[in-house]
Length: 141
Image (cartoon, rainbow, N blue to C red; front, side):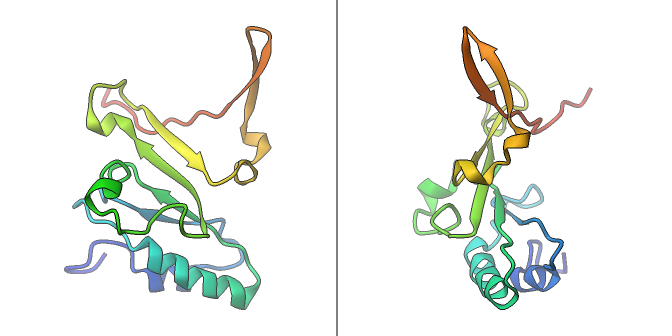
């Protein structure tokens, strides 16, 4: 953060990417001030870096706050799976009320983007039920 600029600078973020970077996370709705980070510029810069280096560094969008707002208020804003490097997005239902505390969802572009070793298989009513669970938030207890 710097004075007057309270979101990630896509250029500076991509400059920090190296061969050990597993993804770059952009926030759509900062907890600090509600601002959206520039996912489109981040994607474009990262596409160029991936071409130059041969890496395949993807993007995760933490749309916990903005994921339910941006599509309706800013339909022209491109921040989601329309961008080729966005591989996963999370949203938090609990920030909008009338749901269980901590409820949220993570979605992946394709099944191949979620490693099989992170999926648990349970037998529910005689059939395989794959499941993936995250704890999005915690209470103040």
